[in-house]
Length: 182
Image 1 (spheres, helix red, strand yellow):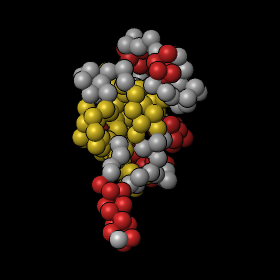
Image 2 (cartoon, rainbow, N blue to C red; image 1 turned 120 degrees about the horizontal axis):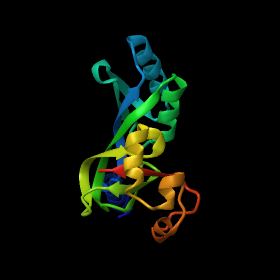
Image 3 (tube, rainbow, N blue to C red; image 1 turned 135 degrees about the vertical axis):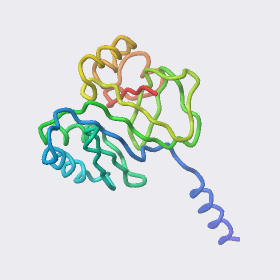
């Protein structure tokens, strides 16, 4: 009976999936040559949650896969690009969502981080999803202004939870919140 309980517990743990970021596509601005791309590549590859990095020189893009179950930190990704002397023009996260998550103006937790959905279908999404990070440091200025006009949420201006929307979702004050477009 005890072994049956253990087997049942293990099977339940194995079947309970959580929402997680499994990869990303990053476009860097300012790359002019293969040596520039190599510098960004090496910096991204050294992140502890990155499993692999592929380079697309034509699009100045880097496609990353993340280690299973790791905590993905978009700010660390951005910092590594900036440390190489460039900036992030776009960061699109690839996520695996086992259950429906909120649409516009909802919050979700992915790979240990909190996200606020600024724009989307309004009805929620599930399954494999592409989620574009639309915070100030992840977009060109012109695009950032477009997204800034979509939200009056305090967390969008500061990047940290605060205000009615975050409080209503139970997010502790001062926590880093990333903003997404679906």
